[in-house]
Image (cartoon, rainbow, N blue to C red):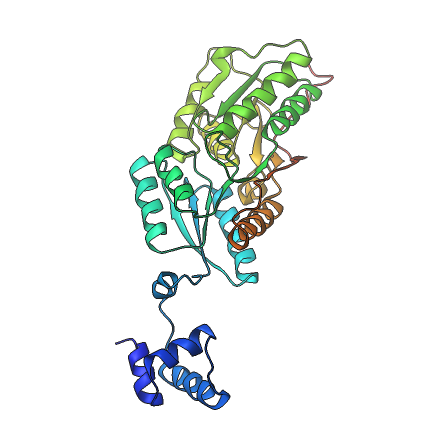
Amino acid sequence: MRPTIYDVAERAGVSIATVSKVLNNTGNISDRTKKKVIKVMQELGYHPNSLAAALTGKKTFTIGVLVPDIANPFFAEVSRALENYARETGYAIILCSTDYQLEREQYYLDLLMKKQVDGIIIATEPKDLNAFQTLQSRDIPFLMFSIDHLALSSHVVTTDDIRGGYLAGRYLLDKGHRRLAIIAELNRPSGRLRLEGFRRALSDHGIELDQRFIIDSISKIEDAKIASQKILHLPERPTAVFATTDLIAVVFMNEARKTNVSVPEDISVIGFDNTIHAEIADPGLTTIAQPIDELARYAIYKLLESIENPQIPSHRIMLTPSLIERESVKDLNGHC
């Protein structure tokens, strides 16, 4: 059995109140007694119960992180970066993946509140606003990550998705492509904004994006396969495809290979995120890079600001993406 505060008090020959004062560094306790209690705690391997600490108004030094799909390499890399920065500040994270399901979202938000986390980083598109407004009513600090919602007042840390989509469109146009398609996560604001930026780039060149070439897909392997096949089986295929996540882009490249369509010789592909998938893809995936490390650092530090000072005004931090050129886009300039 795990040792309790009662075991520590009995072994040290002091009251439970004295042990509590040592734990919380309160009260008038002699150095001799304090050292004795600490030594007993070390001998017994006693660790204070975080929930009990929370019930007394103390911090638990835990942060909840809600992501839509941990299998998505972007959210996997984000989670790792968040954990690294949290550890540097003495915090641990509790990671929850909703798999885009409302029931899981509600369950995990309830769980995190029961665990008395000090704050929550939310990277999911809110499906039940009441659940998130409960966080506000309970004064639980939270931060929206890569998601913004007008009904929720909190810090927001995100990438300029419109600019990212624009960069992708402009790059493909500069490479001579005019018949373009996009596979976008239209269920997420980020996907819709990337589509908007992509459209703007084409519009600036007098090109209207064909509605048949706008394919909706969740950033999951099976959904991306279906979306890829829709494009690959079009009577007249586009010369290039913009996928609004690297995962969708890599799935598309794999599906193309299965149907003997060569990338980039027969069709070019550009992704978004610059995850490890983009580096190890064959050919290497040209992509729009999100500054993952910076996003995670800002997210942790802004959330900690809210934990320390709940009255601090909310800020919206938008970072600029950049284009990483690899080998998945063919230059059509000068070609027939």
